[in-house]
Amino acid sequence: MSPPSPRRADRPSSPPGHQTQHAGMRLTLSLRADYAVRAMVSLAALESPAPVSARSLSDRMAIPTRFLPHVLADLGRAGLVIGTPGRNGGYRLARPAEAINLLSIVDAAETRPGPAICVLRGGPCAPDGRCAVHDAFVAAGEATRDTLRATTLAHVAKRFTAAS
Image (cartoon, rainbow, N blue to C red; front, side, top):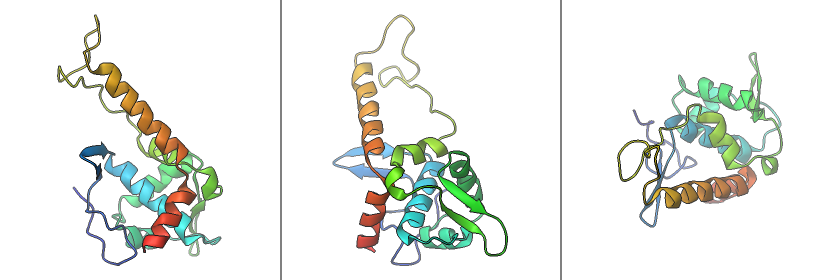
């Protein structure tokens, strides 16, 4: 199930879903990780010291209201957001956006690692050896993680704000 289409100009301009394309390559996140990144970017872009309601985050970033509390709970367990209960409660970043990287957000939301599927065999690489492309795909995955680790939430929020 894909999220609803953005309703306002300050929402992400990418199409609904959780795939990012660039130069023919596709990075696929779980829908949960997609929502986590959106929620964190919104919190960082708002730069509000006051808690932001889940409803406001949901409306701003086209995240289903029934799903967002689960994502925010993941982020809270990872020490990335602080939730404040009550009528004036909501969520805020647990530390400055400069101290949070995209990898920590994705890792907080990706609760189950995906299956190790061999590109050539359609299942796990054989126990007696790796396939011909195994090392290349492992290196690509590590490079992706390195890039997400090097990209701060502050950097992304600044770009998001400039594009809005």
